[in-house]
Length: 110
Image (cartoon, rainbow, N blue to C red):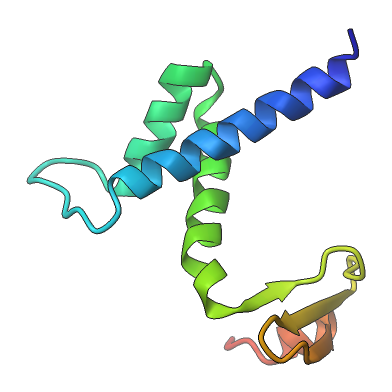
């Protein structure tokens, strides 16, 4: 058995579980004293997959970002993006925007 395939399947299962958890509680207001949804999702992943809290929080954050950003119609083309250049795509118009990391950082507030 190929260990890389097992790790990949586990990562997909972790991501899928995070998406499902977030979908199940979408729009629900936390009760008094209850941790935020992201924290609850991460704790669920820790309990279910026996991963570290850091790994679970990363998976939960990625899933939350995917759920909130996907409807916008914009995405990063990961095939063309490098450590120095971001390729951004408007899925509706197919228009592309290319920005260097230096340009992006120069536009951030100090």
